[in-house]
Length: 411
Image 1: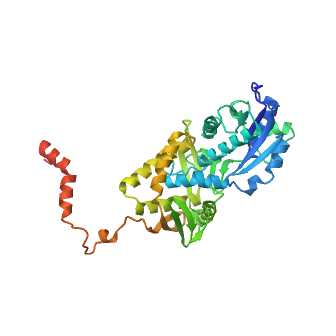
Image 2: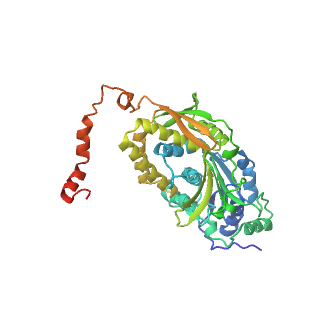
Image 3: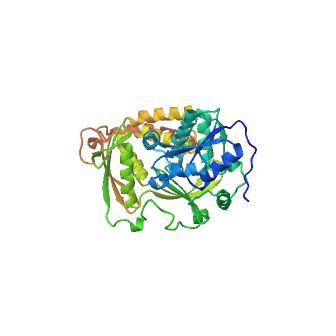
């Protein structure tokens, strides 16, 4: 018989579990009841993972032993309060990853805390393993928003260690699950992306097979013709796609469809986890890749070099902060305040070309553009005296000139 022992905590009477309906959380519900002799309330965050994952999830939670199930629609909050600011900053982790999982965690964990406070729970629980980043992200949010709540992390407490252990545990209690021991990949989906880990991906020498990817077509199978898409922004806020005004959530759904059809947004990365180990994962972020590249194209038009450089530094800092689960911190507030100032200039339209996994900026325009054809032209102009460059260069290279005079030039 599968065993899952821990030392009961008599102070836990009611716990709110971040519930997905998958194998892990299906086992956690009865385990919490047996181990802590407490009431279990399931909390489900709708961050756009899709109807297939949410269908029947309340009934499943109740059959597992939960006394109630709260399903909270967080899609707009996720897009407007997490994704949009991250894109205004140009957040990207280790030059590739658009933070699909990390971006969702603050909004999920915050909503879980709100449910816990609403129902009078004295504990919260998550199904994150002790190896990953998500345990840090959830528990850092719990600490920042409700430090009085007890945190229960079953994977750090119970004796079960494998997928088969969990299946046996549920079978012994006659709790049905759609999971099986043959499942190969671990996936996390939301409105922004889907991630894939496990299977052949655990060998970094092994290329991902076609069965890894589920959101987009392969670039090889994408259409043989390019498609043009226009994105319009007002002060960093995505307002239109192809001339149609829509909410940022609607825009993202549209961009996901367009990008996925052309094999856009696939990456295969070996990343550095916060906990110290490296992990290999494949991510699909088609709409996000278009959003990111459009803002990069727009900033080239409206920001001078110091502002561009600052935006990139802020984006890197914010990406690391998000990856490490430090959203609810004063540092994040300070970073976003600076990002918001720079985003005021991000107004304009960018035209992108989509072709077999590639994104090309084809055009950009803005009323706030710093580009001046009068200054940049190779034709005759009346606004730039080329002879003025001589004095600039002499001063710019003055330190080199002094060094050569003191130490000698080329011998």
